[in-house]
Image (cartoon, rainbow, N blue to C red; front, side, top):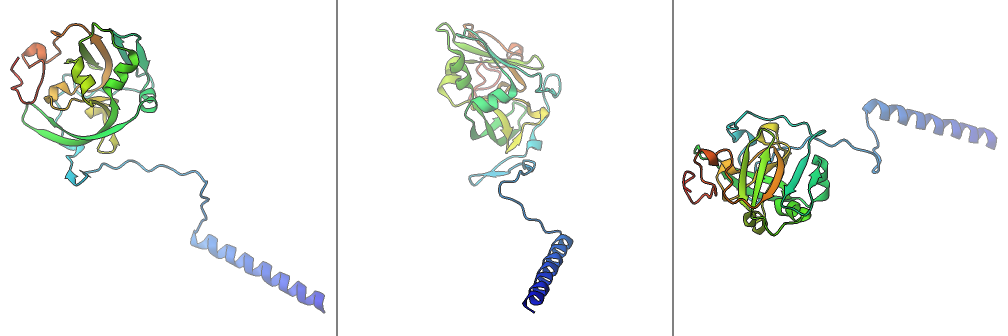
Length: 231
């Protein structure tokens, strides 16, 4: 008699478990292990930071010398060279993985009369320069872009300030139109000094070097507190 009772109980338990399994499958419920892999959602542009409004990425106006540059990072290289102890050559991922990243809210003022305030994220230019080592003769740094655009800065400006070479803006990766893979965040300088699509950083002893717009009459310093046509 006891054997029959145990058999009935076993059958009932099996039946109940089967029903519960079928019901859970039917409702589409799943148990996700905490250690299971997950898919990253696309980054979303932020429009505010620490209580301050941010401009949209779409608020920029296209004014590059040869139109947007579409750089394939699989073959991309950033070179730090010139009056340095070593010539450093980086891939895109090298920059992102080897150097600390920083964020800063900075406004770009264009000579055309518009401005945008963006939350920039990137690495410090002075970290790249320090890693290459500075020859005592160096006093100027020339930046070269993928489209051939160039501009320059006093070495002290880059070493004494926290100048970013950005790879994100408003929490999203730079679009090609905005300088992907890297744009200089040249705070306190007019927009033409904010070079995009950076491929080379060259230390030199030529403080008279003139970049693309500087050769056409724009101020070499690019200081915001001065007229951009002044010397």
